[in-house]
Length: 362
Image (cartoon, rainbow, N blue to C red; front, side):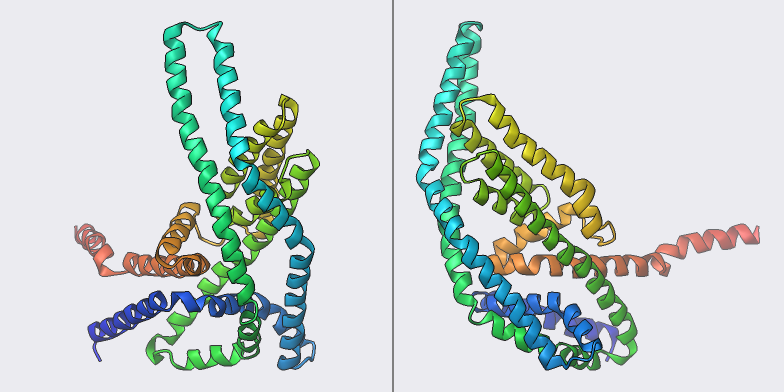
């Protein structure tokens, strides 16, 4: 089989795979989630195996502990979070009206010091700013409502995901060995090296970023609740959990938190405290959490991650969000590999080698 035929075969296989994922996206979520959890837990299972525990026992213990902690987390926080979400949706129109009144008060204050022409321009500007803000709050409320439906769907998947996780984790080494035996013999070493780099990238980013998001969610939830912000627990946790999207998580939380703070408080002091919580959170994330837990060796640029998450969500919904980072990691490793091949090929070096030969002959 020629190189061209091999390339066409692999390309056809990739197209069929992507098409199947697209067609089956509505039922693949528990399987992808189970595989992702098994990937996260496999190192712990390996350590227990090295300590003398059988694979089946190690898998059973780790899977049981993981999902027990998850269930306890839901039982403790779900009622409180659900209550705050429902209250937030109910009060959102009132917050929007309060923000509009405050904008009108600000306009009235400025009227005594600014000319009528400038006031007209300011009113036009405030109208342009208020309309998107109201749309934002309305869209947020709708997103929360749809998010509750998504949460119910995820809870229903909890019946399938633990089963998938157990079997994937139990047979992880066997599956890896089987897939390894299918690799083209003349390219096996090259493929193994690229897979190792992909695994290194995923382990560095996914596991580290998950800890960063969890710690940020706890910090923002405690901090915003401590300063007295309504729904601080929900806003804080959501801000932390969506911080895996660079910049968007903090921006979403800051806009939402400040909007609620301005509508809730009648003084500037508490509003500044809310802003301080987000500022401290950014300092912790940028200078302590991300450098320590993620590092700078993962090779995934923030813009690349944002693009991958948006493209995955647009094409495959929530399943695409789960698959975005692994796919971006694979593409990033392959692009670096192909770039290295290009830089060492005659296509790149031909003119340089010819000039060196001419200079040597001269």
